[in-house]
Every structure is written in structure tokens, then in C-alpha cells.
Image 1 (cartoon, rainbow, N blue to C red):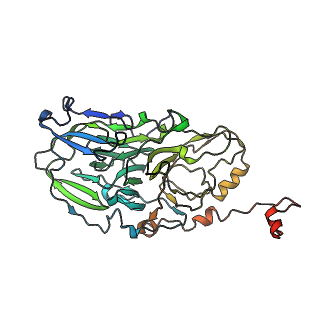
Image 2: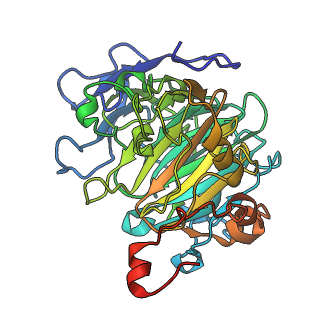
Image 3: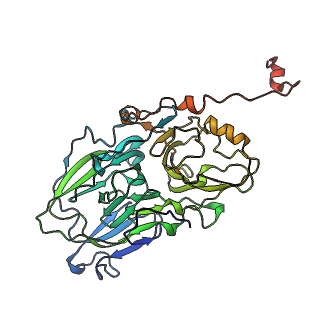
Length: 462
């Protein structure tokens, strides 16, 4: 079956569809009919609009949602800065280090001492959230649920969460999502949420998108189906907590320009009784991805494995694509089947959820680890993988069985933070030496022949 077999059972109901206009009410009659902002909303609720794009964005890009809640989101104290020396989640541009070296990280450690908010570690990025340009790449590792009276949101961008270990039980304003390894979820800019850990410590990767929103890639001549099908994305149904007595104080933590601020309020942030619109969190099971590939010869570009894409102003050059390398059949004839050697105008940050990536059988790329091949930094299969692929029998074979690797591929030049280069202490010093320096020159000139250019220039080539 084209789904993941999860060891942790699902506990919520969802609405299906990517980019669909959804509506949900936890109390029948809470949604107004026709109008969005009636004079007196049902049951004494407040109407509130959540805008994920400008009011006048083109209709095909416009993302807005109407919320019907017990108290407005504005009902809180002033925000105050939180300590930032250890929680600066978006250093100034000067603190990014753009370097051409190929980088690879050992698996990042679990940390049972922190909750979701304090687990976020910016490893790399580009751009500036205050200009709504670029992206940030995070590693998270947490061992504690958030305080039950705390909520978090990012004003900087959309969070694409790739869970590698554990289970995330996420209560958002619009309802609940359960996220397990091999599932991803997206929490849009500004949506408030709480993260519980029902199955122990968690670890994974986050791509924060500072500009635009994710969309499904165009399929072109592939047709109307395949890759990530719209019907397989799941959005929450309305679910609310009734706590507005004033006796319990809640903390609202905001990530704003990469720094943390906190406000207090005497009511739960999770009081949305009904909602309708196009701006909402969602999740997706990577096991449902329908791969396509060559059934004759050659290896197509990895863009055929794109799940989600965030477009830039230049068609075809995304701010970032989220790409996966799932189990798939390889049948191409007379073809070098692993990924080819490559220099790319795009930057490639890779992670591994589980298993072994088929271009790295020489070791070193492990689940919970990562690699970065920046703009025009040469990369490709390690020497062991290459030599094996030269002589392997080319019969139909299943690649990536039991594995799921992914890539954040960006048109931007990526800088690495001080934490990513030094403080995490996970950078592998021998990446090049182990992967590509062992490759040997195998070129042999045909006996008795000289290259025409060398002959004309007087070079004997010996």
C-alpha cells in the first residue's frame, strides 16, 4: 500500500486536500452562513481574520482564513524580549559563513533537557526575515513537552518540519496534528501552536521559509497525477479549549526577526471554535509520494522527486524545493544508476530520516545527520558507490528500500552559522578524503592515437 506503516497510531481526524478551501466547526452553527463578519457572530464568538498574504494578492496566491473564537488573539499583554544569547534563532547576516566546502554532519544529539521552543538551532540560511526574503534551516532536538500553558508562533516564516525521531502532538489554533517519522507538516507564519511529546524525545529538521508559501510543483507533461497528490495532504478540524476564567495565565512566545519575545494572557490561545479559509497548517505522509523515473535509459534530474516548492520571482528557480528520495524501482538500461557527479547553481542541504542513501554506501551519511553542497560545490557518489555501480548487473532493482532521504534545494547561496560550523561539534573533518579523493583516474588513450588538439599544439600527451 502507498502509505507508511506507523508504529504510533493516529488519534485525530482531518480534512483532505492541498490548497483547498476548508471549513470546520467544533460546535454546530458556529460558522456564519454567507457573511464572514456578522454583527453578532453565533454564541458570542469574535470574528477574526488571519491573513497569510496581502489583501490584494492574485486570487491563485491569496491565502486568508476567518476564525471564530472566544476571545481575539490581540487580548494579551505587551511583548517583552526574552534572553537571546542562547535563543537567537536568526543571527545577523554577518554571522552567516558562506563557504564553498562540501560539508557533512554526524547525527545530531537528542537533548532531553529542553522543550520545542528551546530546541531550535539555526544551522544555515540565507536572506533576512525582516525583508521577507530567504530561508533558515534548523535542527531541533527536544525531550520535554512545552508547558501546557504556553503557545509559540513565528512571525518570520512558514515552518516545514521534517521529523526524524519521536512523535509530535501539535495543537494549533485551527486544530490538532499528529506527526510521526516519515510525515512532514507545515505550520504557516503567525499560526500559534503547542507541541507535546507523547512518545519521548524528538529530533528532526526545519526549513523556515521567509518569503511566499509552499505550493505543489507543476507537473507539465507528466499530466494530472503523480508526485505528491493534492488529496493526500491533511488539514486539521476545529478543536478548542474552553478556559477564559482569568485564573490561569498563559505565555505566548513569538519568534520575531529571529529573536524571542513573550507576552501573557489570562485565557487560552486555543479557543477557535470554527474557521474557514485557505490559510492553515497541514501534514503529509511521504510514503504516499508517487515516484516517476526513466523506463528506458539515463537518470532524470532529482527535481522529479519534488514534494513542495516555494517559487521565486524567476520561474523554475525556487527559493527552495523540498525533495525526497523514497524507495523506487530502477530499470534503466546501460545507465549509471546512482546520482551522477554534479555541480549545481542551486544549493543542496540533505538530511536522512532513516535507512541509507543510495549514493553513500561508503558510510558517513547517517540518519539524523546532514550535508550541504553549496552553489557550484562539486559532489556526487562516493568512491565505493561509484566503483560498485560500474560493474553491477543492470537488472530491475528496488533502490532506497527502508530509506528516506530528503533535500532542501535552494537557488540561494547558503551560509552556515557558528553553531553549525563549530559549536555543534558534528562537522566531519574527513568528508572529502573519504568520499572523492580516493577516486582514481581510469582514462586510457587508445593505443596509437593522439588527441587532435594536442597534436595541433605540439603536445605529445605522454
